[in-house]
Image (cartoon, rainbow over all chains, first blue to last red; front, side):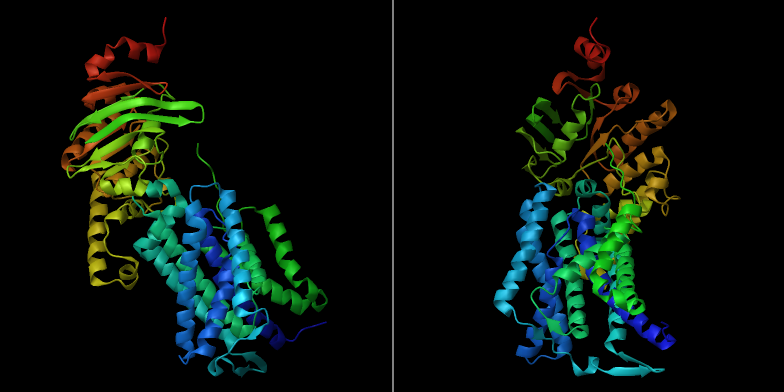
Length: 299
Length: 255
């Protein structure tokens, strides 16, 4: 079976757009891991909350959709900040496994909370008219959102890169992820930096959730769990703790998934399995991930 | 300035420090010596807040009022004016030499995250001052040329100097140096002694140092504490310590 060039371009565009969604969510995992060495299992559910909050902001208020988007992302960021305050900070000095279990608990809580409050029945995401256009490019029909998603992602990545490399907060984040204890001894207020990290990660996840809602306009309380796992995998593939790695892993996973289904339609049912197989291969071949550094523990 | 009051530090059944007392006055250079495993670094870790002592307390007074610092967080203690270097160098490895020093200015910066993202004039002014200060400190330790290199690419001796520059960037009143002369030859360690004396005067510091090089310890310390197996076995000026029978036994063994 051969594929025409235009078809291939269509799949490629789709893959890039899914990949950039994965990248946005994977950043949250990797930033938190970089500083706290914690896998924030509730991150996928934060993503879900971002999508739902947008739904409610658009459907139940008369504010314009773009304000609703920003508002929902900011509130989701604040929820992420509260999540850390309530579920993780009290356990700061506990063993790592304890915090991990707390993260799993927080994830279950958010999923069930969403089921009770938002209802278990799927909701249709209200897509703004402006973003719901099909454009025709040289015979390829593509929804305009397929281009908007990578564009917004790149914009956010530039912003994030700026914060991390050019602001004092970003510098403190880097120092903390290099050497947590030394950074504290050099006077860096760990709690503040961690709060900011959770805000940023959750904000990005919410933006991911909103764009996910536009691309796949069906909201469910458990919608965060599979993308959550996949983005965690993306972060591991790229080298967890490394932001560039999370972006790379996100794109590899998104493109890989779409192209797998496009080139081998018979394997469509194995789409999710692809992510896990890729994870296993990476863990066997390069356990620190593609861009991860070898960690040497000094005595 | 610093009062270590009856501090005991236990790790399970191991007593790393037992009822340790020390009183350091402003402007002094005080040494802490003892054989390997005597509990010297443990004392530093208690003072800087890495460990919370099992018993006893640590009181710090930088001239304003007395703060009980045992039990406080490391960043709070750093803010009060205590900073340190490490026995096994702990720089932020992949960051540049300049960034290593710059980041340690962090706690003295008043502007918040939003002003730093928006680059308000206030933040830019502050950033400029911090940059100038960082460059000055690098110049002071002779690392200005290497400012854009990665910290872990520097040779060992320069990494030690960078650690001191980084510690100075936090504006400490009390500087804790954990084996600053480790791995240095006699020429380098005598330069180091001179350097410590200079920065002490210039930055109005009190210095508390752990060292194995006896020429350094005896050369610059006014007072010396000797630890062995977590116990304080002697205390006094260099001459008294050199002639102290228990110290000689601790180092050389009993015949």
